[in-house]
Length: 278
Image: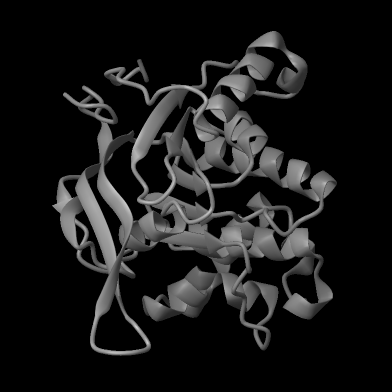
Protein backbone atom coordinates (compact mmCIF):
# COMPACT_ATOMS: atom_id res chain seq x y z
CA UNK A 1 0.00 0.00 0.00
CA UNK A 2 1.38 3.44 -0.93
CA UNK A 3 0.84 6.88 0.49
CA UNK A 4 -2.68 8.06 -0.26
CA UNK A 5 -4.22 4.60 -0.22
CA UNK A 6 -6.50 3.51 2.60
CA UNK A 7 -7.19 -0.06 3.68
CA UNK A 8 -10.92 0.37 4.00
CA UNK A 9 -13.79 -1.37 2.21
CA UNK A 10 -15.78 1.89 2.22
CA UNK A 11 -13.51 3.55 -0.35
CA UNK A 12 -15.65 5.75 -2.59
CA UNK A 13 -13.04 7.22 -4.94
CA UNK A 14 -9.79 5.60 -6.04
CA UNK A 15 -7.22 7.62 -7.98
CA UNK A 16 -4.54 5.45 -9.56
CA UNK A 17 -1.18 6.80 -10.82
CA UNK A 18 -2.89 9.78 -12.44
CA UNK A 19 -0.94 11.88 -14.92
CA UNK A 20 -2.12 14.92 -16.84
CA UNK A 21 0.04 16.68 -19.42
CA UNK A 22 -0.78 19.62 -21.67
CA UNK A 23 1.00 20.08 -25.00
CA UNK A 24 1.49 23.63 -26.21
CA UNK A 25 2.84 24.76 -29.55
CA UNK A 26 5.49 27.44 -29.49
CA UNK A 27 4.86 30.60 -31.46
CA UNK A 28 7.80 30.06 -33.81
CA UNK A 29 8.56 26.78 -35.49
CA UNK A 30 6.89 23.43 -35.05
CA UNK A 31 8.39 22.64 -31.66
CA UNK A 32 5.99 21.76 -28.89
CA UNK A 33 6.31 22.25 -25.16
CA UNK A 34 4.79 19.83 -22.68
CA UNK A 35 3.47 21.02 -19.33
CA UNK A 36 2.97 18.35 -16.66
CA UNK A 37 0.08 19.39 -14.39
CA UNK A 38 -0.22 16.18 -12.34
CA UNK A 39 2.33 13.41 -11.96
CA UNK A 40 1.85 9.90 -10.54
CA UNK A 41 -1.00 11.03 -8.29
CA UNK A 42 -2.71 8.26 -6.30
CA UNK A 43 -5.32 8.72 -3.58
CA UNK A 44 -8.25 6.94 -1.94
CA UNK A 45 -11.25 8.83 -0.56
CA UNK A 46 -13.70 7.26 1.84
CA UNK A 47 -17.48 7.22 1.56
CA UNK A 48 -18.93 10.41 3.14
CA UNK A 49 -15.45 11.83 3.77
CA UNK A 50 -14.80 15.58 3.67
CA UNK A 51 -11.37 15.88 2.04
CA UNK A 52 -9.67 19.18 1.23
CA UNK A 53 -6.79 19.77 -1.17
CA UNK A 54 -4.31 22.62 -0.74
CA UNK A 55 -1.20 23.50 -2.70
CA UNK A 56 0.64 26.32 -4.48
CA UNK A 57 -0.95 28.07 -7.44
CA UNK A 58 -0.55 25.96 -10.57
CA UNK A 59 -0.03 22.67 -8.71
CA UNK A 60 -2.97 20.93 -10.40
CA UNK A 61 -5.73 21.25 -7.79
CA UNK A 62 -8.37 22.47 -10.23
CA UNK A 63 -7.02 20.18 -12.95
CA UNK A 64 -7.67 17.24 -10.63
CA UNK A 65 -11.29 18.35 -10.12
CA UNK A 66 -11.71 18.66 -13.90
CA UNK A 67 -10.48 15.07 -14.25
CA UNK A 68 -12.68 13.84 -11.43
CA UNK A 69 -15.72 15.58 -12.89
CA UNK A 70 -15.07 13.96 -16.26
CA UNK A 71 -14.70 17.32 -18.03
CA UNK A 72 -11.10 16.42 -18.90
CA UNK A 73 -9.32 13.15 -19.63
CA UNK A 74 -6.09 12.00 -17.97
CA UNK A 75 -2.97 11.43 -20.01
CA UNK A 76 -2.54 8.15 -18.15
CA UNK A 77 -3.85 6.47 -15.03
CA UNK A 78 -7.46 6.49 -13.94
CA UNK A 79 -10.10 7.59 -11.45
CA UNK A 80 -12.69 5.14 -10.15
CA UNK A 81 -15.92 5.85 -8.28
CA UNK A 82 -17.37 2.73 -6.67
CA UNK A 83 -14.86 0.78 -8.79
CA UNK A 84 -16.31 2.22 -12.02
CA UNK A 85 -13.88 4.22 -14.14
CA UNK A 86 -14.68 7.89 -14.71
CA UNK A 87 -15.01 8.36 -18.47
CA UNK A 88 -16.97 11.59 -18.68
CA UNK A 89 -19.43 13.82 -16.82
CA UNK A 90 -22.26 12.06 -14.99
CA UNK A 91 -24.99 12.84 -12.48
CA UNK A 92 -23.18 11.00 -9.69
CA UNK A 93 -20.96 14.10 -9.36
CA UNK A 94 -22.07 17.63 -8.51
CA UNK A 95 -19.85 20.68 -9.04
CA UNK A 96 -19.75 23.99 -7.16
CA UNK A 97 -17.36 26.64 -8.47
CA UNK A 98 -16.11 29.97 -7.17
CA UNK A 99 -17.98 31.91 -9.84
CA UNK A 100 -21.46 30.57 -8.93
CA UNK A 101 -22.33 29.81 -12.61
CA UNK A 102 -26.01 30.65 -12.09
CA UNK A 103 -28.32 31.35 -15.02
CA UNK A 104 -29.22 35.07 -14.70
CA UNK A 105 -32.53 34.66 -16.55
CA UNK A 106 -33.78 31.92 -14.20
CA UNK A 107 -35.19 32.43 -10.73
CA UNK A 108 -33.50 30.91 -7.69
CA UNK A 109 -35.95 28.00 -7.78
CA UNK A 110 -35.48 27.47 -11.52
CA UNK A 111 -31.70 27.46 -11.08
CA UNK A 112 -31.99 24.78 -8.41
CA UNK A 113 -34.32 22.74 -10.63
CA UNK A 114 -32.11 22.90 -13.72
CA UNK A 115 -30.48 19.48 -13.33
CA UNK A 116 -33.86 17.93 -12.56
CA UNK A 117 -35.27 19.37 -15.78
CA UNK A 118 -32.37 17.85 -17.71
CA UNK A 119 -33.28 14.49 -16.17
CA UNK A 120 -36.87 14.94 -17.40
CA UNK A 121 -38.41 14.98 -13.93
CA UNK A 122 -42.09 16.05 -13.71
CA UNK A 123 -42.79 19.63 -12.59
CA UNK A 124 -44.42 18.80 -9.24
CA UNK A 125 -41.58 16.48 -8.24
CA UNK A 126 -39.04 19.13 -9.25
CA UNK A 127 -40.79 21.66 -7.08
CA UNK A 128 -40.84 19.38 -4.04
CA UNK A 129 -37.12 18.66 -4.37
CA UNK A 130 -36.15 22.29 -5.00
CA UNK A 131 -38.18 23.34 -1.97
CA UNK A 132 -36.38 20.76 0.18
CA UNK A 133 -32.94 22.04 -0.77
CA UNK A 134 -33.88 25.71 -0.66
CA UNK A 135 -34.96 25.10 2.92
CA UNK A 136 -31.73 23.22 3.58
CA UNK A 137 -29.64 26.25 2.52
CA UNK A 138 -32.01 28.75 4.15
CA UNK A 139 -33.27 30.40 0.95
CA UNK A 140 -36.88 29.26 0.79
CA UNK A 141 -38.08 32.88 1.07
CA UNK A 142 -35.97 33.87 -1.95
CA UNK A 143 -37.22 31.17 -4.33
CA UNK A 144 -38.67 33.62 -6.86
CA UNK A 145 -35.80 36.10 -6.76
CA UNK A 146 -33.19 36.35 -9.50
CA UNK A 147 -29.40 36.09 -9.12
CA UNK A 148 -28.85 39.86 -9.52
CA UNK A 149 -30.97 40.38 -6.39
CA UNK A 150 -28.75 38.17 -4.21
CA UNK A 151 -25.52 38.71 -2.28
CA UNK A 152 -22.44 36.65 -3.11
CA UNK A 153 -23.05 34.35 -0.17
CA UNK A 154 -26.65 33.77 -1.19
CA UNK A 155 -25.61 33.01 -4.77
CA UNK A 156 -23.20 30.38 -3.50
CA UNK A 157 -25.97 28.81 -1.41
CA UNK A 158 -28.08 28.57 -4.57
CA UNK A 159 -25.17 26.90 -6.36
CA UNK A 160 -24.83 24.37 -3.52
CA UNK A 161 -28.57 23.67 -3.52
CA UNK A 162 -28.53 23.17 -7.29
CA UNK A 163 -25.61 20.74 -7.05
CA UNK A 164 -27.34 18.73 -4.32
CA UNK A 165 -30.82 18.72 -5.87
CA UNK A 166 -30.16 15.91 -8.34
CA UNK A 167 -28.66 13.83 -5.52
CA UNK A 168 -25.04 13.31 -6.62
CA UNK A 169 -22.94 10.89 -4.61
CA UNK A 170 -19.86 13.13 -4.74
CA UNK A 171 -19.71 16.91 -4.41
CA UNK A 172 -16.73 18.67 -6.03
CA UNK A 173 -16.05 22.18 -4.76
CA UNK A 174 -13.44 24.41 -6.41
CA UNK A 175 -12.64 27.34 -4.09
CA UNK A 176 -16.37 28.03 -3.64
CA UNK A 177 -15.86 30.69 -0.95
CA UNK A 178 -12.72 32.29 -2.38
CA UNK A 179 -14.44 35.47 -3.62
CA UNK A 180 -16.40 36.13 -0.41
CA UNK A 181 -15.54 38.45 2.47
CA UNK A 182 -14.12 36.85 5.62
CA UNK A 183 -17.32 37.02 7.67
CA UNK A 184 -19.53 35.54 4.93
CA UNK A 185 -16.91 32.90 4.27
CA UNK A 186 -16.95 31.69 7.88
CA UNK A 187 -20.76 31.67 7.93
CA UNK A 188 -20.86 29.53 4.79
CA UNK A 189 -18.22 27.17 6.16
CA UNK A 190 -20.54 26.41 9.07
CA UNK A 191 -23.50 26.13 6.69
CA UNK A 192 -21.59 23.68 4.51
CA UNK A 193 -20.70 21.52 7.52
CA UNK A 194 -24.36 21.47 8.54
CA UNK A 195 -25.41 20.47 5.02
CA UNK A 196 -22.70 17.81 4.85
CA UNK A 197 -23.84 16.35 8.18
CA UNK A 198 -27.42 16.22 6.87
CA UNK A 199 -26.62 14.68 3.47
CA UNK A 200 -23.46 12.63 4.16
CA UNK A 201 -22.09 13.33 0.69
CA UNK A 202 -18.47 12.64 -0.18
CA UNK A 203 -16.91 16.09 -0.62
CA UNK A 204 -13.66 17.02 -2.39
CA UNK A 205 -12.91 20.65 -1.55
CA UNK A 206 -10.14 22.70 -3.19
CA UNK A 207 -8.94 25.80 -1.33
CA UNK A 208 -5.93 28.08 -0.91
CA UNK A 209 -6.76 28.56 2.76
CA UNK A 210 -5.08 26.25 5.28
CA UNK A 211 -7.46 27.51 7.96
CA UNK A 212 -10.50 26.65 5.86
CA UNK A 213 -9.13 23.21 4.98
CA UNK A 214 -8.50 22.30 8.63
CA UNK A 215 -11.82 23.66 9.85
CA UNK A 216 -13.89 21.71 7.33
CA UNK A 217 -12.07 18.47 6.73
CA UNK A 218 -11.51 14.91 7.86
CA UNK A 219 -8.19 14.93 5.99
CA UNK A 220 -6.12 17.57 4.20
CA UNK A 221 -4.06 16.67 1.13
CA UNK A 222 -1.04 18.83 0.29
CA UNK A 223 0.13 18.91 -3.33
CA UNK A 224 3.63 19.94 -4.35
CA UNK A 225 4.40 22.66 -6.88
CA UNK A 226 4.20 21.69 -10.55
CA UNK A 227 4.21 19.05 -11.50
CA UNK A 228 1.52 18.42 -8.92
CA UNK A 229 2.33 15.36 -6.83
CA UNK A 230 1.00 14.10 -3.52
CA UNK A 231 3.27 15.56 -0.86
CA UNK A 232 1.48 14.94 2.44
CA UNK A 233 -1.82 13.85 3.94
CA UNK A 234 -2.86 15.20 7.33
CA UNK A 235 -5.68 13.56 9.33
CA UNK A 236 -7.74 16.22 11.12
CA UNK A 237 -8.68 14.61 14.40
CA UNK A 238 -10.50 17.60 15.88
CA UNK A 239 -13.89 17.31 17.53
CA UNK A 240 -17.07 17.99 15.62
CA UNK A 241 -18.89 20.35 15.69
CA UNK A 242 -15.86 22.59 15.34
CA UNK A 243 -17.11 25.88 16.70
CA UNK A 244 -14.43 27.33 18.96
CA UNK A 245 -11.60 25.03 17.79
CA UNK A 246 -9.60 27.65 15.90
CA UNK A 247 -7.75 28.88 18.99
CA UNK A 248 -6.97 25.46 20.46
CA UNK A 249 -3.34 24.25 20.59
CA UNK A 250 -4.11 21.25 18.33
CA UNK A 251 -5.60 23.51 15.66
CA UNK A 252 -2.68 25.91 15.73
CA UNK A 253 -0.19 23.03 15.57
CA UNK A 254 -1.97 21.56 12.53
CA UNK A 255 -1.87 24.97 10.88
CA UNK A 256 1.89 25.19 11.44
CA UNK A 257 2.57 21.66 10.18
CA UNK A 258 0.51 22.06 7.02
CA UNK A 259 2.06 25.46 6.31
CA UNK A 260 5.55 23.98 6.72
CA UNK A 261 4.66 21.19 4.28
CA UNK A 262 3.11 23.62 1.81
CA UNK A 263 6.20 25.83 1.85
CA UNK A 264 8.61 22.91 1.54
CA UNK A 265 10.11 23.32 5.02
CA UNK A 266 9.66 19.63 5.81
CA UNK A 267 10.46 16.54 3.69
CA UNK A 268 7.53 14.84 1.91
CA UNK A 269 5.75 12.27 4.06
CA UNK A 270 6.52 8.58 3.70
CA UNK A 271 3.69 7.60 6.05
CA UNK A 272 1.37 4.82 4.92
CA UNK A 273 -2.17 6.04 5.48
CA UNK A 274 -4.88 3.52 6.34
CA UNK A 275 -8.63 3.98 6.60
CA UNK A 276 -8.25 6.01 9.79
CA UNK A 277 -5.96 8.50 8.09
CA UNK A 278 -2.80 7.09 9.72
